[in-house]
Image 1 (cartoon, one colour):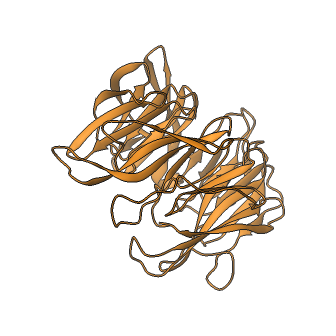
Image 2: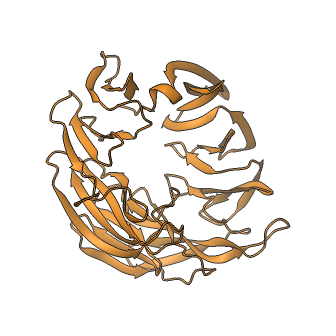
Length: 367
């Protein structure tokens, strides 16, 4: 696990003593660990992204602030960057940049994809992909395949798939016309065997007693071999970006809009849906085994694929494994970080001794 204590970043491997890596300050900052638990990537709030070994050696800048040079800095308007994540089983970090012309939410932002080597700091460009909504934190239009060999990019025209060397495997598959004049993008979810994707195309509308002509998506299963796509029918259609596909590619949870807060569980094999109940939802996160999910805003609800009920829980921070997740409980102006464990339908909550507001992030992953 990684944690920030008094402005210092620590790495702890299992029950071994924590290793102090470096000083990063007390801001709320992001960090991640490579699959082999040997390389840590973190930020300091200065626009740079850093890497360091899990033993505290070889700290270096891998993505520079682009106030004056490349790579880019988080400027609005200007060039923005976003970390997509580690390429599986490597020390390569995928990130995207967007050159935005204004601060407007839908301003034109031509984007590019890059790989940063967390060992050497060397960066290489994979390609340019037209427009993006870089300001949108819920963007799901870039994703690395589980085998680490490909990356898929949703554009305003369709979907491109390329290798990690930048070679195009498929170009402009699933072309579509957005349902509104708003700039909309496909959302992409890789199948676990990297054979294809579940793709949400925002080319239809959602209508109910609370909303009318609201942007929604049709859902497709696309396979790379054969270059074929099959639509999966859902009624109602998944609306806006409320949806999230399970890691095994078999389920989708969506809904939970304000004034129309029914949450739905959809079967991606046949389009069958099940009403789960009312739960105003900002984000849905699936457990790694695809059996449970958490829908969260100010409140959080735990659901399961084999149960029609939603159980109120503490506000989700992140999943750890199939039966554990960190969550936050407010105490005055502070948010205590806790571990939630559920076995045989019983949820137990343990205090981890961290305060989110003061000691910032805690990042935990299975060994």
